[in-house]
Length: 226
Image 1: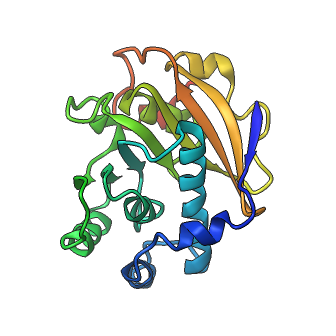
Image 2 (image 1 turned 180 degrees about the vertical axis):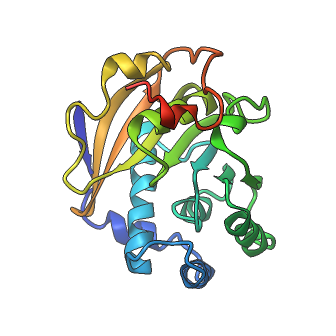
């Protein structure tokens, strides 16, 4: 498994793609308790790491992306800022968080469609509007690897990629076991390192996800596949 490291100067270039309104929205989100304790500028930089990892893996912006458990809008709001022509879906089970995001993005100027969805990932993965419809799925802090993989794989189109935030030191070798991923049609691709501070695991859907997945709401967490 290889390692991608962003070149010098790329962080500044990515920051230049962001609109001024983004910082204001994320600060409101933090005030409402929708974001963690990490300073807003660092949260934005961490989200830009998803942009770097995705564009490195697929050689350009994706045509569609779903933010799995978007919470207060990170990395989803950063992604829709950087990819104005991309279909973006922000998914979360919280009515308060999705209500906030829908309100804040109602007048966002972009070319691609944007949808804020309040639902459980297990349910969305069985909805034909979303199943196998995304070139990219991202996860900042959705759940443990087995839960994230089971909920993300059904959403990915064949050949699509899943990018998951990892601890700063990177993923342990047994964190993403090949046998468990194969059950879902996934395999690990590369690890990405961004700005010397943030790590990500990139996975690729190179097989079929059986109709049995995702299992019923709550089952992936109660009985993880690996």
